[in-house]
Length: 119
Image 1 (cartoon, one colour):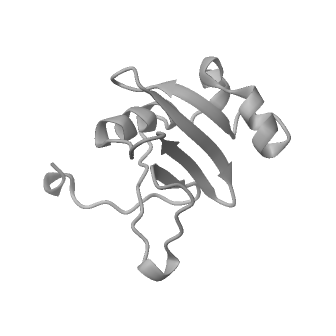
Image 2: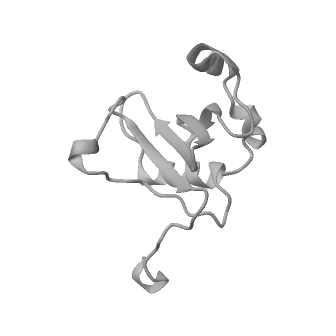
Image 3: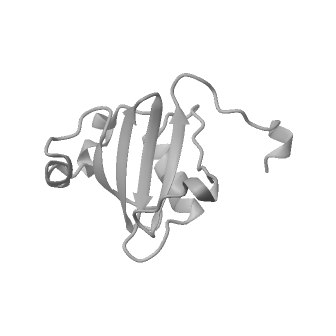
């Protein structure tokens, strides 16, 4: 994941203090990011336990693919692969109906199909 101090202009310190009791740093924080169509996206980013994680939400709907791609490009390095996971139903937990997540393991590459199979 990128150093999150590079996104300082979008950081919401008051949200961080209210939610976590502390301010974020280069590895975590809460942000209000203009989306690709100028609609603000709420983003929570964290890094720990071997994973980089970014959640993206809107008050009235789930983010679109274009919005998730926009956030991926802001929060992850150009050559990093990030993924959305569809876990087994028995492990599904939803705390916010309009929120999607991006994940990246820190210690190993994400397996990918051959590039010719990815359109």
